[in-house]
Length: 231
Image (cartoon, rainbow, N blue to C red; front, side, top):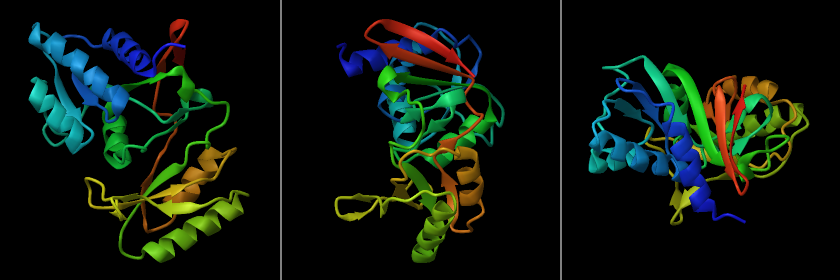
């Protein structure tokens, strides 16, 4: 089977074909998006004129180091194209994102893009979302009450499973926005839209990792080559 890192590079290279001179880009976060940034930087060094909004401080740092010009959504509120990875890709290009902890900024940037392309290796393609724990970004204040409300909302949709506070080096993981993340191991999410609505109704939930009706294309790399899915 092809090396997974090589597949990520192939998916990123294919997505780069959609980038045109003068574009305003949303630039994602994660291991596959990092490969896209490296390839994009090579094109920029060769004279490609683009400007990007990074979805995390980590991506911003990589872009600055490699010479990819950056802007902000304050300066450039409308973007032409977003390129980002995903933790799972389900039917109709519904996604689970946020494994890297940047889901809030990723969703804000994706919403500002005229088109979003998701890039991944083919192992991320699933029949039903949910094998990957759903990241839910929450406010630190009221954490216990928010977690209990999420559990009740899940129960109402016949979902169960452990909801765990994400930690790093024994301390709560803190997002670029200063929030915590709860990773919810719900298993098969048969009604992602209903779950999305239920989570958004909880005051302590800042955002969640269900990206619905956002991606228009998915570039998937596998041992047999690269294929394209469209919403």
